[in-house]
Image (cartoon, rainbow, N blue to C red; front, side, top):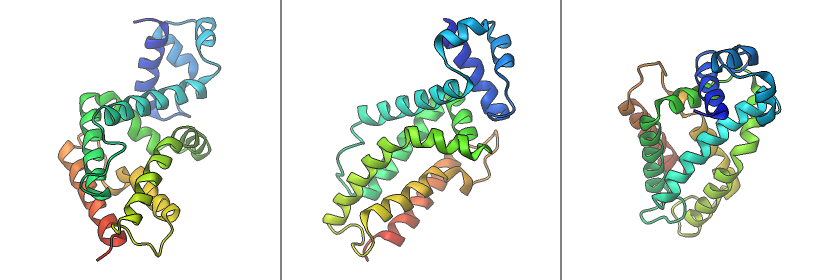
Length: 196
């Protein structure tokens, strides 16, 4: 592993176990056996490292979804596509358990100012992509038109981003539990927002 990979690997583990505020940069560097000078050659500060890790997870997950062609077309409708996207994301984190633990810690981060800054940096692409899909669903009559697509999009984003809050996430949470919660969430979205 090169310097950046060692720092990211140790930082991801530390942030997942302790949360952002309880991890010191010195601890990360000591465990990664990297000098401060070397660290600062690659990162500005601890927050940039954290943001870099979030970006890495988001980018790799979206790359997978894009490779599967699940980001543009709606062959069986918006809610079917969301189910497929969530299953692809679950499969992705199943293959990379360190990403799962880190992602859960980011979603539960107690430093809400940090979390909001990080989310603003990385959720825009997904939010815009989802809004495109929601607008299409409104046009074809799959989603109610009495609520603006932007409001529907915001509701969906809020629920999807906080999916882990709908379950008792423990270290032994199974993929089946994620899929079950995801299916329930999509059912609520579809039946609450979909046309009858």
